Image 1 (cartoon, helix red, strand yellow):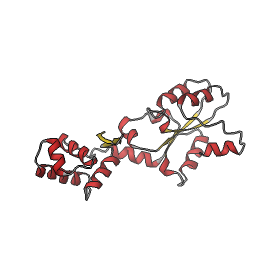
Image 2: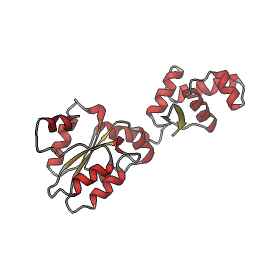
Image 3: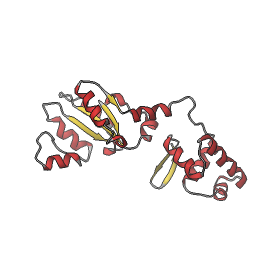
Image 4: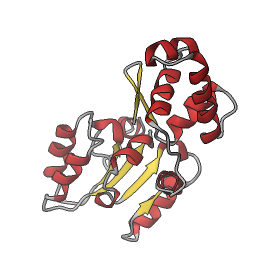
Length: 201
């Protein structure tokens, strides 16, 4: 949106906006001067990883700033953050992080948003939440909004057993209710919610 607004005002320093990796590549491969690419992680299913690899093979080195909306995929997929020049969580906008990143990039450095560093550290802690297979099964059904009775029927266990699993999940995830269990499981990357159906990450 920022780029489109700038283009509409006639600023020639902005080359354009693109909606898919091929457009980005075609735009940058003909540039003889280094450009700053602000790449949104939703550009492709691989979050732009292949595009960045292709750009790195061009004769003109371009600066890549990756904008991440959902931190779960970085924790789950171990995206090679070293392949980009800067990475910023979109929730950090308005907190001066973009200006910090651009300042570091101008000096030739690499920048990682502290919010992303913190999320990655949480996901690799030795005390990260460990769940049994049955607890993970219960968590998935909880995320789909099922009652203890429905979960028990699906898993083939007693309702009281499901209640025990839910209590354990609440304890392990430091939650006070079922909704908070699901929210915290999403936050720490134990669940991925896509297409209206939850899955264990």
